[in-house]
Length: 350
Image (cartoon, rainbow, N blue to C red; front, side, top):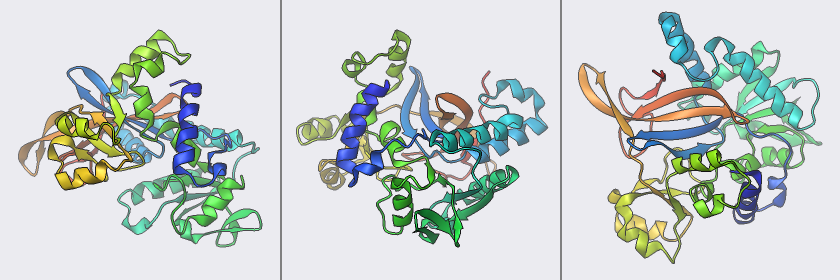
């Protein structure tokens, strides 16, 4: 999408979703580890989701290095940054975010931030990220946002200044209780926060998909014919409103219904599984209806038994350049990490 196109939506998202216009200020960073999730089908790839804080990159880089160690001929089939170059490229990415906010040199400290850390299934990745920053000379902490303080114009952890925050929160507007110090520091420009609320509104709010899948909207943007053609990969998506709710209910088997500000497959419903009770909540608003794009399946052996598991593809990028590709294997309505034998898997292009 052109910047003009998304700027129209980011103003709407800010007005509807943010209680303070300073959350929409452009401090410079464009957001580390953008994630684009695809289903592969008979009609080609379909972009079903865009994420600003896509998890798993450090874990998948480690997996790629392990794969390369035991199967070197796999090198040419892997897509994205070569495993041996991943750290250097990612370090340049974080430095670019730092300097995009007008900072010089490099940060001295970084906080990797998420809620209820000990409950996070991606906590091992946070620890990998901590080691990565330490190898590059930073003092790095993995912290809960409630451990942070905004004091006399600077963000602090245990009385030490925090220069950079690698944000893994799914509170995209920083509006939840306990996130106030991070929110205040961000709005004051006192810390480099990546990804930040503006990044999410501009790139990952699911209402963007209603524009990306609208040929009429695309015709008004300053994009090439090739770029316009690539938007065919976005399944038709509309907001659920009072005006179209009855029509969408009648055609519900053709759609997935997702909360516009949702994450991690929570409160996402496949149309043919929706009960009337759930539908009454959906039709109140705040949901998108996305044309169903069936995922492919792969047969694999789990505990000695051959099973068919669904998969999607995640492309990690920064500033439009690919970093890494991985698959996620699962069973159920939506992608998850609870399926025995499921989880992240390497991708080889043949």
